[in-house]
Amino acid sequence: MEAPVHGSTGYWADAAERRRRRRAFNLLMATGLIMAMLGLGWGVFFALRGAWAVAAVELAIALLGGVVILMARLRRTRAAAWVAFAGMAALLCFFSAFLDASTTTIPGTSHLFLLVLALCAHHVFRAEPPGLRYGAVFALLLAFAVFAATPVGTPAPFAISDDVRRIGIWVNLATVVASFLVVMRLAESDIAEHRALHRALRDALSQRRFELFYQPQVDGEGHIVGAEALLRWRDARRGILRPGEFMQAAEETGFILPLGQWVLQAACTQLRAWHADPAMRSLRLSVNISALQLRQPDFVQQVSDAMARAGIDAGRLTLELTESVLVHDMEDAAGKMRALHAMGVRLSLDDFGAGHSSLSYLRELPFAEMKIDRTFTRGIVRDAHAASITRNLLQLGQDLGIDVIAEGIEQQDQFGLLGEQGCRLFQGYMFGRPMDVDAFNRRMGAA
Image 1: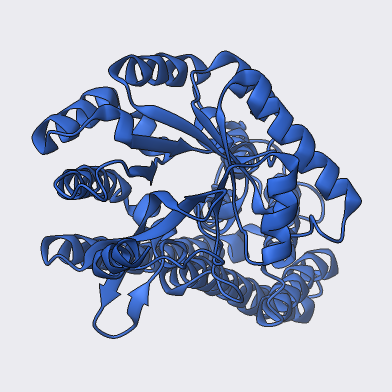
Image 2: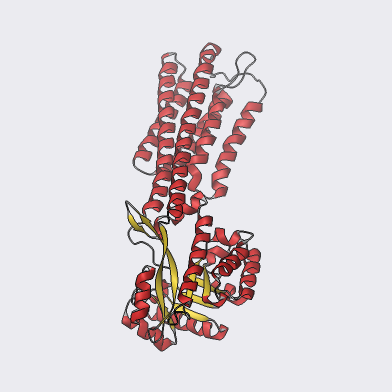
């Protein structure tokens, strides 16, 4: 696993984040503007008629809309969303219960805005945890259902008069329809961007703009014993893009699956090419596997087919998995990993120590290798605590009979200290940055 892109999450990752923020900003601005205009207009109207209780509620809605607009413009999107939806829901419920309740002659319509609010919440809270996101939508829909099913009753003494409500019905209905159209238009633009992104990734694969780079893995003597395959996208406008710059987009569009299959087949094909060279036939190649890939029912067969097409020794292929890949369905993942192990494929636990369950995974699953996370190796020389951790991890690997690779090695003193602790496999910029296959082959020839 290579280091993240420093200072930026990358073009496509940034683009995805920008789309989410823009969508939330536009919806909040639209919500705040509608609240401000309706609240102010009706507030002035009812104040001129002397209906001060109703005017106060309407002006409160207008004030709330202004606050939402201000907070959205200050980029406090999450806080603005909660102010908008919690405040508006409370005011609409009060309005529907006391000021605009259905009577025998005029139906109430204020509760219809709860539907628009629920639709907006579904989009604005998209980045929130599912329980929070769908919980907010469910609460708003439940409130709508309660008011829609409430039987006709006697209006409160300070309720809006029927002559005003006869006009208000059409104003409310027109506003609800217009609001629905605005939200739908914003959603359509988001879908269009999603499709364009998927098309860009698909075109890049079909036009062979993706390729594998290789970062050397060395032994204690500095000899190259293998490599990690790292995906790159050669884009005409932005140059060479690293996974952190487009992988999130690939996951969002579902393109990670065909892309992952291509990476697996390309890696096996490269192993076959290396096998034809006596100086390189002993090299092992590591490939990162995503959670979506591992969850595919036929993933084991995909790996088997890729190796069979390339005609390679399974022991030369290493599949790297992080703890986050394993947490979704442990039983299913374990079954597939044991099947891969039985085929001879090596399995590596990447970023070991970064998660709380790493030790149990090593004990229960057929890993042949673990990679010490760079967060431990980075400060090993200056931090006695980090040095103690790496020493214990190396001892753990020895006790379990599995290989241990120290990642993120950039300096000679890191290399030396880890070697003294018993580490025999290393990866990092000190031994070479990710390079294209021609550069890697030249490096092997010069080694």
